[in-house]
Length: 350
Ligand SMILES: NC(=O)c1ccc[n+]([C@@H]2O[C@H](COP(=O)([O-])OP(=O)(O)OC[C@H]3O[C@@H](n4cnc5c(N)ncnc54)[C@H](O)[C@@H]3O)[C@@H](O)[C@H]2O)c1
Ligand SMILES: O=P(O)(O)OC[C@H](O)CO
Image (cartoon, rainbow, N blue to C red):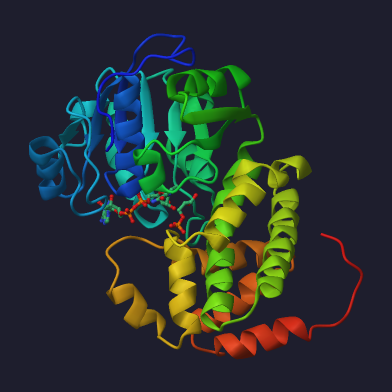
C-alpha cells in the first residue's frame, strides 16, 4: 500500500517545501507528482483530460494512466493550464514529445521566472531533431533558458509511485540549478544525482526507446539471453555515437540515463516500448499494437526522429535503422535480426 502521509527524512528538501506544478497527468507526471506530494511539497498537476483531473481529485487515483495506485490526498489536479503555474517554485514538463511544443506554448505566458523548469519527457521532436530542452530553448525567451533541466534515468512510473527504491539523474547547464531540483526530489526511496551534461542525459532517454523496441523484438522472436546482451551492448554503442556527435560526454552514457535506462527498458516487462517490440516479434502489425494502447510508447515515433537526427549528423545506427524498417513494414523482425547479424565484420568500438 502506498503511504500518503508527509515523510520527512535526512534527505528531505534542504530548501524547504515548494509549490510545484506538474504539466501532464500521464503515468509519469502522476507518479512524479505523487512522489513530490509525499515528500511534502504543495503539488498541482495539470491534466489534459477533464476526467483525469476529476479522478485524481475525487478518487485519489488516475484510473486512465496509473490505475490501482492510491495517490496522496494533498495532490490537487486542474484542467486549466494557467492555474497551477502561478507562483510555482518548480515546474515539471511531463508531456509526451509529440504534444510537448503545443502544451509548452500554451503554458509559456504563465511560466515563473528563475524557478527550475524540469523536462521529464524522453524524445526527439519530429522535423526539428530537437531534444525536449532544445525545443524549449527554441520556443521560450532567453530569460528562461538557464531554468531548463532534464530529469532522466531508469524509472518506471508504477515503481516510483509505489516508492520502490530508484535512482535518477537531473541535468542542467548550471550545477546550482540541478542541485535545487536534486534537493526538491531527494527522499530515502528516490536517490537523485546531478549532471551538467544536459544533451547527454536527454539523448540517453530518447535513444533507449527504439532500442527497447528492438530488445522486445528479440524476445518476441524467442531469441536468447546472448542476443539480448549483444543488443544492449551494441545499442549502447549507437547511443554513445549519437550523443558524442551532439556534444554529449562519453561517461554520461554509462550512467543512469544511458546504460541504466537501456538495461531497464530492454529487460523490464513494464516497458511500453519493449512491449511494442515483443508484439512485433510475435507477428502483430504496428497499427494493431498502437490502436490497442492508450499510453504512449515514445519509440514508435522516436525511431524515425532519432534516425533522422543520426542521418543528419552522419552517425551510423544500424539497430535503430532496423527497427525503423520493421515499424514501416519494410522487413520482418526475423529479417532485421538476420541482417544485423550478417553486417560487415569489423573491430569492436563505439
Ligand atoms: N511512464 C513512465 O514510466 C515514464 C518514465 C520516465 C519517462 N517517461 C516519459 O514521460 C513522458 C510522458 O509519458 P507518460 O508515460 O507520462 O504518458 P502516458 O503514456 O502515461 O499518457 C499519455 C499522456 O499524453 C497526454 N496527451 C494525449 N494527447 C494529448 C494532447 N493532445 N495534448 C496534451 N496532452 C495529451 C495524456 O493526457 C497523458 O498525459 C514520455 O516522454 C515518456 O517517455 C515515462
Ligand atoms: O515504458 P517505457 O518503455 O516508455 O519506459 C518508461 C521509462 O522511460 C523507463 O525509464
